[in-house]
Image (cartoon, rainbow, N blue to C red; front, side, top):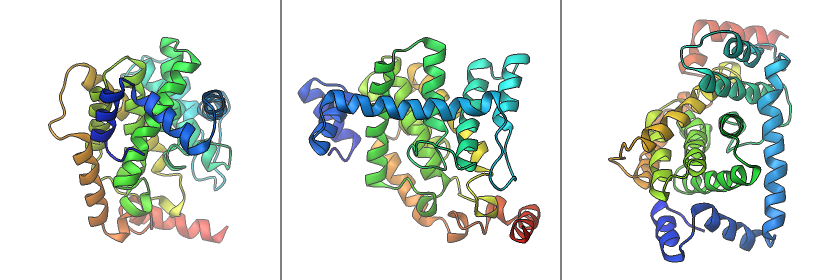
Length: 290
């Protein structure tokens, strides 16, 4: 297993392979599955992603608690019927990220990519990229492998858990994975992949995890929407030639250190941040009374 971007980039150079090819080799070795079996698994995974990303666009979805929902439908309608400020690609991506978040909150089937709380970011990115640019399923699967390599490095060297590192770890890791996937799809270099991933982490460094009522709903759903935008702009910054002053491996280390320094009240305990506001506390009392 490659435990750093540097080791993976060195291996890519030595073996004349892409990140997704190295990741595929690792998966075959670890799982004793063939290439065809792995791609079949990726196909099933992506089908779940597509369903969750599109489910809330045409049918409003409400969470089990009733506290949140129907926002994917609203944003999709806005995307189709209004001249949005950010453009149709971004608003559509936000709608899809909200959709998966709402499917998760309604106990539907999602892919934790890398976690349930951040599950809307990577699916929304991939589905929107395929919808806008007509990428083949195989190209999407290769992007998924690339994303998984980035997520694995973050998990090994820092954390992907909101309870351990705050939302910077969950939505940050998901956005980094999604940014890497976009670069893979756009034909960027291996260095570009890790540059975009590092931008996505830097952009939300220090973001706390403060779920209202302790539920993975609010502000989690909003952060899924902003997370997919983070991935898109991180990729565009990279493709425009903006360079990363601090490399990916050091950025991951910094994120891990910030997570350790965050107080317990800001790490998924629903004590501080938005969860500690007067309105959130009132909602919590109402939730307990149900």
